[in-house]
Image 1 (cartoon, rainbow, N blue to C red):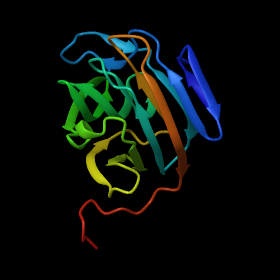
Image 2: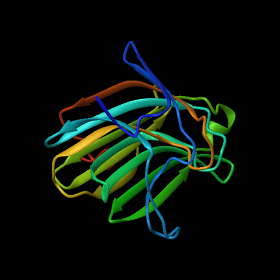
Image 3: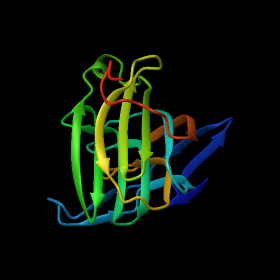
Image 4: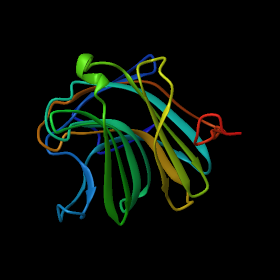
Length: 192
């Protein structure tokens, strides 16, 4: 594992990564805000082809845009990040797809209102140019599809990402990070 923009504090222990973010960190390109930020924290490994990556994440989301999850990255202008992001006063599952310009989609995680520290599992499966993004709130909850997105079929980096655009000090725990062969997963329950 290697770092792009290592955080000021991080530790690996028994397969668990803990970190604390620096101030004003983010990944974003142009859309709506008219700026480019490429200084978020990203701990990654290189992958040449298809894969499935998965991680469980817990964090103390409090400030606007606090975020943590997975990222697949080709370069500074082509990437996808997916995870929990604090916006409008509560945690959302957030996906940003960037092909020179970023787009953003969010799904409120109302179940996390009662248990804001609940672990969230995040999974990305890449097959050629298609990236399937899924999430599950809780250790045994079923997977939900968040997005099916396009990303150019080039060698990529995959790993854990965290940012805090409005503050320093987002504490994040990543656990059970794993990258393996791409799983065969239908997009709809009961589909054969």
